[in-house]
Image 1 (cartoon, rainbow, N blue to C red):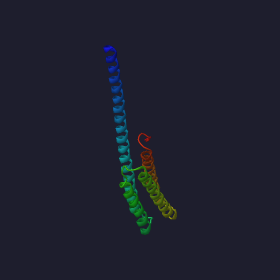
Image 2: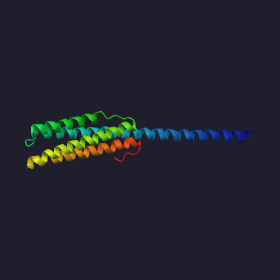
Image 3: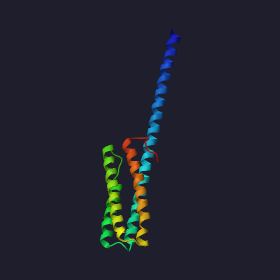
Length: 158
């Protein structure tokens, strides 16, 4: 009887150890996922802000755009840059709102710049299109990261 009690006790201890180890593994993995998503978010934010600054610089240097267009587009770019800078890890609703605002902001920048460039179809005007496309790609990457953060840990593909 005494031996059966010890075997049962040992079995209970082993079961608790297995559960504790599984819990620790899950917490470590979840922590890595959260850190990884946070690092990716920071990287995508930095990249989006960098290409926006480059676009802003290219617009300011551009000769075919009127001062009014430069000011309007520059203001939209600055606003979008500020919105990106304010993104923090937050609730899903907050991330969804930030994602929508950034998408809307990029759409406004793209529309305004395309309208301005549509009137000036010179080689110099066409030189801004690659900068705009780089911005759109960076914003798309950031949006994907925000969407993954909305869904929860472990859903990011990039």
